[in-house]
Image 1: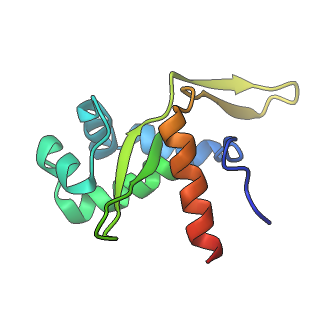
Image 2 (image 1 turned 45 degrees about the vertical axis):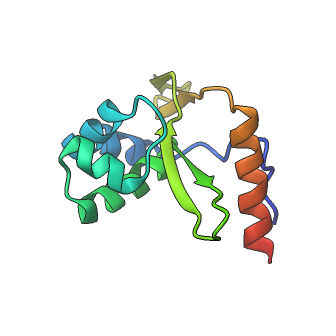
Image 3 (image 1 turned 90 degrees about the vertical axis):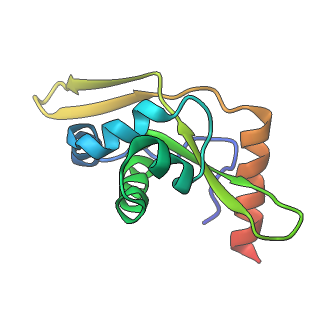
Length: 125
């Protein structure tokens, strides 16, 4: 199954989002992201060890709170860059008294849409 590179992925599990929001290192990472950064830049700015930063970035992207883009470099050594991907997170109680989460995402820039297409092409080759 090929994902739509222009659309958002399925909504994350409630527990994944809550785990990310409850994690102090994750909150520190989000707080330093004024612009897209690499994992090493994030680790330097946030003071979170690099090995921990990688784990927290995975949790934050799995929870749809961060966007992972690809910086295409001429030498072929492409780098992941991370940016905040939400405007707000809302926890809801549905008609069956079950909790649900809704994340209002930021609009994708043309560069981010192109990155998504490039990432999907790389996965298929």
